[in-house]
Length: 362
Image 1 (spheres, rainbow, N blue to C red):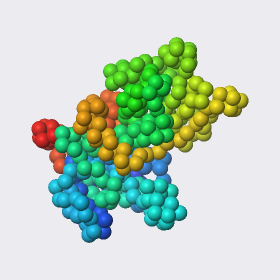
Image 2 (cartoon, rainbow, N blue to C red):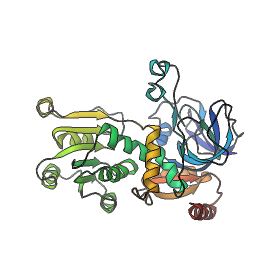
Image 3 (tube, rainbow, N blue to C red):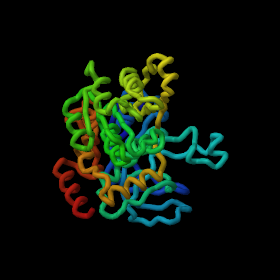
Image 4 (cartoon, helix red, strand yellow):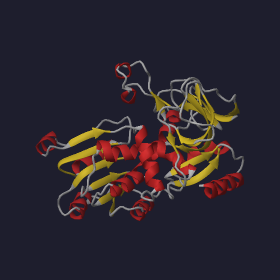
């Protein structure tokens, strides 16, 4: 099969013919339909995430069909369309020893600790897989695992957004755009999008933001105060993850407000005066990942027509063009929400033909 390979010592990326892997006990082999390009994939290439293996296939936002069942796998059949989870429990930490695999303290991440899905086939755990409902396009199904599920977990579980909450979202790329959509779906009023790119601000407004502001506006806090009728922000999400944006998120909070850090960087956190933070009883919380049930719920929302991700797949590329796709994401060429990989197409024309066939079958 064809697979992307990253040599982590030299950061060299290749497309190679490698053996199709065999699923072990409790695992399945998936024929990959599509796999997204995520910023966390880039973090391994850039050296911001420490490598765990000398060579690895990247890509963790994927969907496809089961091609083979490993020993002991029940409840699934070859040909089932599925979305795998992008990690597996270590089975060694204290939470795993207690049987709480969902709370694993050392989750092994797909495309970091074991081979991912920028390939024609990938092996994943059967536990936690989600069946793709009829009518849900496979490209949208692929990006649910992380690009949409992580924002869903941030909005629902960490941010606890409820009806009438005022929500601010700093950074309107792939993660922030979906936080805007999901916060609105959860009943937030108003939803405010913040960025320094005018094009993505306009896109966020088209996708449901009630207000959009430039985060470098010196009058930003006054504009947020006016937009919220003076009450400021109940839940502020930082999808950028740098010192300046997280401080703005905290500064924007109302009494008892929550600032949720979703974006990640190596910078130190700065939250402003501790006196204000304590007197106003603000909270600063970190968020990471999602639960497998989140993917199921999102798939059902798409099926029911409650969540529209039709604009979330900005471009589809052949696997052989993976370096071009990585460059587009890294340099924000065209301000993509998500670029996804078709591992079976050789050319852009084949991508288009495969995409048309997929749309007809959805």
